[in-house]
Structures are given as C-alpha cells and as structure tokens.
Image 1 (cartoon, rainbow, N blue to C red):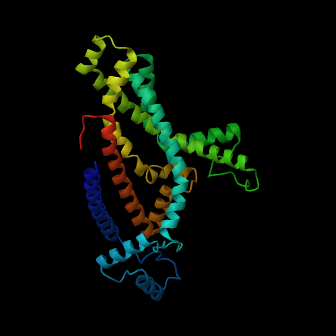
Image 2 (image 1 turned 135 degrees about the vertical axis):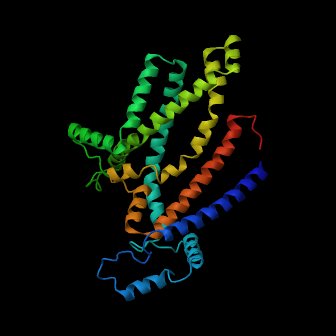
Image 3 (image 1 turned 30 degrees about the horizontal axis):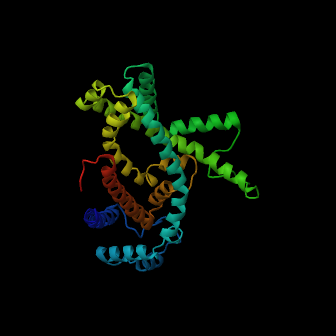
Amino acid sequence: MLSFIGRSIVQKMITLFFVSVISFLIIHLAPGEPSQVDPLNPKFTPEIVERFRKEFHLDKPLYVQYLFFYRGLLSGRTVSWKDNQPVLAKMWERFLNSLPLFIVGTIITWTLSFPIGIRSAIFRGGIFDRSATFFSYFLISIPGFFFAYILIIFVVTRFQVPVIGMQTFGLSDASTVRILMDRVWHLLLPSMLGATGGIAILSRYVRSQMLEVEGQDYVRTAKAKGLSWEQVHYKHALRNALLPFVTMFGLILPGLIGGSVIIESIFSWPGMGRMAYEAILARDYPIILTVNFISAVLVLLGTFISDVLYLVVDPRIRL
C-alpha cells in the first residue's frame, strides 16, 4: 500500500511538472504579449510598459520567467496584474465561495441519480423508466443559461424574492439566523441548476451500467438460488456496477473551477469559475496560470482518490 502511494505521488508530480510547462508555453503562444494588458489605455506609456516588463521578469527568457513565476506562486508572492492582489489569497477567497455551491450540487446530483438510474434499470420499459428517460433528455437538451433565466424570472415574479448574488443587499445589520437562512436561499437555486444536467447524464450512465450487469451469469445464478430482491440487485448487481462511477467520482474535483462558470456568471456568484473567466478577458496571466495549475492538481488528486477507492469497491483488485 505504501509503495503504491509513493509510486503514485512520484508519477503525479512528474505529470504536474509537464502540465505546468505546457500551460506556461501555451499562454505565451497566444496572440499578443503579456505586457499588452491594456494597449488602448493612454496612461500606459512606453516607459510604464518597459517598467512593467522588468518588474514581472517579462524581459527575460521563457525558462527564467517560468522559474520566477512558480517560485513566486509557491511562496505566495505572485500578484494579479489586474488589481495587484496576491494570487493565492484571491483564489482562496473565491474557493471558499465556490465550495458550498460545489458540495451542495454534487450531493444533489449523486443522491438523486443513483435511485433514478437503478429503478429505471430494474423496471426497464415501465412508466417510471420512460418518464425518467424523457426528462433526462429534456434536461440535457435545454441550455443551462436558458433554464437559469426561466427559473429566475419564475421565482422573482412568483415569490418576489431576490436570487442574485450570495446574499440580499442590506442585511448586514440583520440577525445571524436571518443572514444564514438568506445565504442558504441564495445557494439553493444555483446548486439545483448545477445539478440538473448532472442528474440527467449520470442517471443514464447508472441505468446502462445496471442493465449490463443485470444480464451477467452471476446475477441470474443469484436469482435462481432464491435470494431476496434486495440481495440480487443491491449486493450482487449494484456493487459490480459501481467501478466506472468510482472513476467519475474522482474526476468531479475539477468541477470546483470549470463546472460552474455559466451558473456563477448568471447569478453573480463570486466563485473561482467566474474569476477565471474574468481573468481571461483581462489577460491576467498570473490568475490564468494559477487556475490551470490548480485544475491539474485537482485532476491528479481525483485520480489518486479513485485508485484507492477501487480497493473498497472491488476486493479482487490488488495494488
């Protein structure tokens, strides 16, 4: 076990190094130069631009810029070009905003997808299966931003309550309970919208995987032995159908950054996805590179968690 963890960490560190190099080179292959932050601004004289290039080591070779950037990032000295704020501090603040949105949306997705998919597979061709299939394809077909605007209009006109932002304006002097309930309310709609597409897709995967497993010989043998309905479907079929979802579960961590850009923009939620989008528009290269780096860390961490979870789900797997 320890040798597996050690090998896995070394392999993922090597992968992370190559990802950081490739993402750094891709940024510099983009049209324009990093020093052209706002070329139309008359305040950016050639002298200021040259001072800017020297301050951020943009006048040095690429490999030297790479070393300066990641040394500053790991030591916490790298700052955003947009507002001169420390990059890690900005990302930590946005991470805390995105985390509840991600957790609630993930819980809703996974707790609803499995019952829907399992029941659809067990009662294949029935009313429930046909209804679930219709609503799944219906939710997949509707663009998320369109569904979000429809829901916002409905809630605001029907209940006359605010839904934009993380909290209602003017509640700074309210009681703690009221502020907490207001935060929960503002969290509910974007989390539900973020989960709708996931439920539609994941429930289809669960259904197809369960149907494949239900046709195996060992499931038919379990039925022939007279085992109970629960033992056949949940102990024999479901456990063997879980392996692909272990991989999927490990890969949901990058959703902290890229999975909520549209939702955060529509609801004016100050999260990491919205920050990354704004950084791309503003050519804030330190933020863009840091987002890429953290995304790679989350992907590698998710795959490592998946490898370990395989042992729990399937005892036949040995390291």
